Length: 67
Image (tube, rainbow, N blue to C red):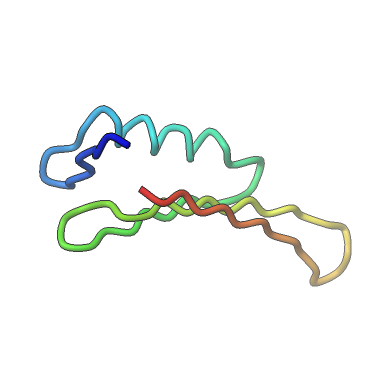
């Protein structure tokens, strides 16, 4: 496996691709969380939310991409 630099100081093309993929995978409702430790992106979490007609109810689906 090739080690990719996900530093927040010098943002690589590979990191941009990962973030774009995460954003594109969000459906109508959701979020993307980027976790950073010591100046390095360590995790990208994608959350898709499914809205329902049920009063007060909602469903969500989380997918974590480890980098």
